[in-house]
Image 1 (cartoon, rainbow, N blue to C red):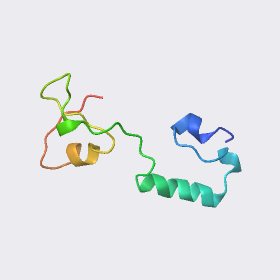
Image 2 (image 1 turned 45 degrees about the vertical axis):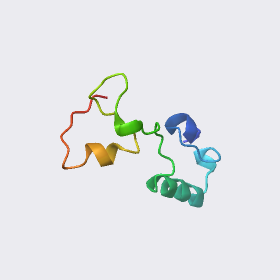
Image 3 (image 1 turned 60 degrees about the horizontal axis):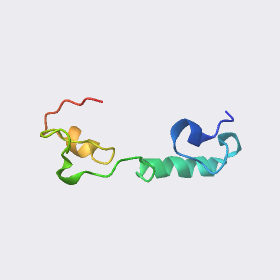
Image 4 (image 1 turned 45 degrees about the horizontal axis):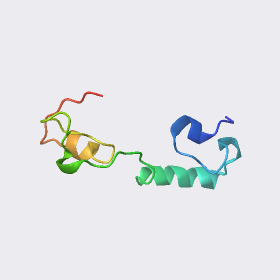
Length: 78
């Protein structure tokens, strides 16, 4: 695979994946697992959608906390 990772995933290694070392790929995966590469909008105040009262806005950083919380019931429209 010669494609630049950034073009496919939005997360870039410093060079083409075919030229990356195992250590660079490992570091990239580790950064992703630690949440360092998560793309996310800023969390809105009170998690509320200003254009749609009563709706909660989910972001990548709040998805697990809000949507996967067993105390919450939710329907997600993506």
